[in-house]
Length: 105
Image (cartoon, rainbow, N blue to C red; front, side, top):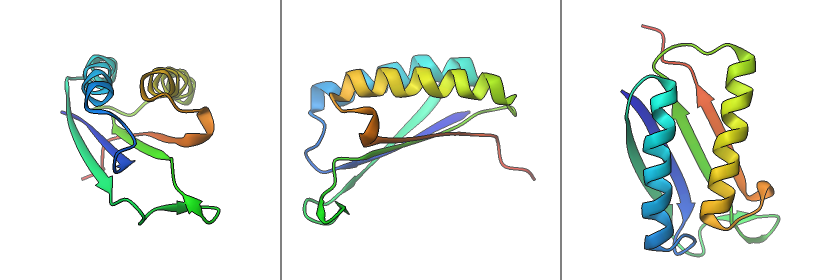
């Protein structure tokens, strides 16, 4: 199963946007091998900072079912960042996105 872990600041993304992003992540994950399990974590308000200001950054980590060739990974990262920035209403500077290969046993 593909996993998607989303780390956001408390109150940063409305429940409606969060639901829409989760739907997009589930659709997107099928390109990586299978439907995803999406896990959300929130950083408590006042606990996350970037450059001495309250952080507005989202971290999205997706683990693929199979190893990806680098050109495919780059294309998928562009797609992920595009729908996340539109869906979350943030800039490209406010997302850290990772698409990792499955863990080696």
